[in-house]
Amino acid sequence: MLNKLIAIIRKDLALRFNGPTELVFFLILPIVFTWLVGGGLPQEMTDPRIVVPVVDEDGGAQAAAFLEALGLSETIRPETRSRDEAEKQLDGNDIGAYLIIPAGFSDTLTADSLQAGDAAEIVLRSAPNSNIGLVAQQEAARAVGRIARPLLVARESLAAVESVHPFADDAARAAFFEATLAAVSADPPAERVEFTVAAAGQTEVYSQRAQSSAGQLVTWVFIPLLGASGLFVMERALGTLRRLMVTPTRKSTFLLGAIGGQFLVALVQMALLILFGIYVMKVPWGQDPAALAVVLVAFGLCGVALGTALGAFVKTESQASNLSIMLGMVMALLGGAWWPMEMFPAGMQQVVKVLPTTWAMSALTDITMRGQGLADILPEAAVLLAFAAVFFVVGVWRFRFE
Image: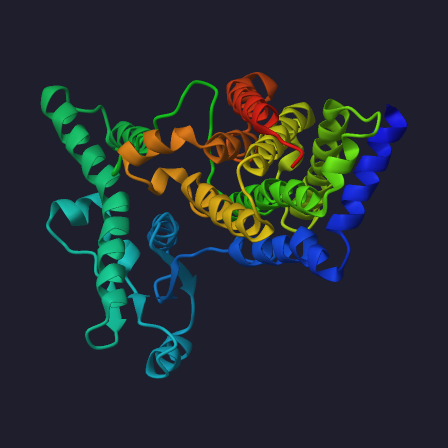
């Protein structure tokens, strides 16, 4: 029986890879689409904030504190420049605005000056109607507020304590002010509160490269597996299956060989695409090899089982080819292979759970983006195997030799 299985597998592989066209669909196109959809080679992380030059003409401690506070902005990135350089860049439209910390800034940004109503001045130079100028103005005001707030709080605390119990001398008064200022500065009030809701022990970081690698794998492996229906149609049309009826080869042996060959080819294709994802696209496929292996085997069995079921219904090779491409693309598209499932309406996300591609993509993104392991992907793998069982039963039940 083993020799017969090997012979059937070799025969099917020879029929499938009888020209260079199949290699294009087997490896070249999947790699090209993975590369294009994933955005090419991974780039080094860069700061996406808008560069706003800052001219420091003060050079004092508060000017340094202002630069540090401005550096906390999520919108602009301050870079110190000379006034001539900044003005030249503004005139050349290389920048939209720049800030000037004037001389004496540190002297005006003290508790006494602020209490007296003196304003700490920051000069903004921007191009006409520049949105960057407006953003820089807002961020500069926020940075000054970060510095001034602790000073005002410490000054008010000092006045409140002094009204109840005067200090023994100026040294005690100064020590209290410095201690209060240090305490307030160490724990500044939050300007923004961010909430992140996630399941315990679960994190998810979206990656376009991981989405592309998983999605193109599902797409380009699923379509050829559905196309296995064409092999059955061709064998039936050529009379090969009819001639098998007069040989000692059992129906189960033929089906096992035909299905096994396509399944092994799918595993090889998936392994090559995953290696490309790991070493070229830098996708973290290897976080849990056992989980990955279970998902790939379950997905491969599901795909070849659906191809077997289709082979029992289609009557011509053109029908098999057209149906496998159309069905494969639609199921991949709706299953989240081309864009994240989270972009679908909530109701649609529930409807597409009837598709095996949805469960395959869920399991693969669990591994690559959510960092989950074998125990976490077992439900998706079980659903894929259930799909495979149903498709196999239908395909074997409806299978005919002529």
